[in-house]
Image (cartoon, rainbow, N blue to C red; front, side, top):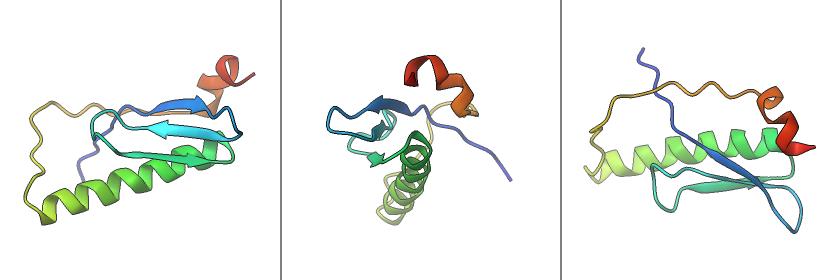
Length: 80
């Protein structure tokens, strides 16, 4: 199975929790109480966005997929 990754911008929400934005898909974002939850919700949002785009025949990949392997340890300096 082909693995495709998308960049996810993870930012602390001033009101608490985190916001995850997926720049590849305008309007595709999610949030969560924790960074893990926000990233998990972003993954689900990406899958739902692609499913919707395929149903509407708007999804075509015009770029080379890049696997983005995110680990919370990578964000330690940012999250502290």
